[in-house]
View 1: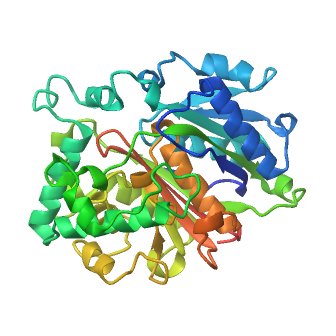
View 2: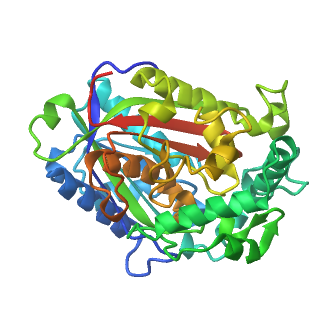
Length: 400
């Protein structure tokens, strides 16, 4: 979890690359440099203005380089400046953002660069083989579980309890793909109709390929600075009004607690992280106080579970609200206007992209997928077996 920070901090620059399956034109360190330079240009800064760096880098086997932080320091020309690497699986980018935020809000540094890159396309065995290793070998791996099968189990449970069906999840996927088509940096930019989603191959029922995230390569970076620094900058900023994290037990079976509060599909760790971030930011009614949300939703069937955990809808009612258009432009809150994780998934920085997308909406720099009048946004990160969660609230106003 997290306490209220000592002093305000803001994202003053941010950038992502154009994501795709492979980036054969650069190596990992060059990709890191690409992201860092782009974010610093967006902030109107240079490396000389950076006091410290937080590297968002998930499992080494995904990109095939052991301890990339060792080469990243030289590649980024840090010249003796502090660097720390953060790794919390899919939540890595949000966790790295939170670490950078705390380095600034604590008063230790004035300007911190958070940067990461992913080259999942380089993994000759496929990302799923790596992700299959996250399960406890004695307790869970023999099932055998993987991230897609786990999503299927949770989806079936949600369907059983609340009456959602495959058509609902196809509609959600189609909406996200339509949003991704407007985002020039998204990996998947071809819209798909709900019928096409339902015609795509089944991975593990009821999860289909077009309901699922791709494996993406690319870079992302953000510059987080103190209020004193922001006063010297000409560009727009996104104030980090609240940021928190919560981690649950590693063993999936140990999360089968008393219903209904601790039902596994309730994602109680996400709920607690969101509630803590909301409390810092003074958010008491997300649907009326937020304009944009960028939750970490790797499969379309996760959307209702996650939105309910984040208090966008009462338990069991997020699908009904989706059918009414609540999460579309003109609805209550625009959810994943970037296309979200369903359209772009570079694991090391997927959660950082969520944070950046929320910041760019608030800064008015989301280009073709900008939400008109967006002033307050939230983003989340998720890692492990629905185990590690982070949440952030950003605004164009530093005051609560």
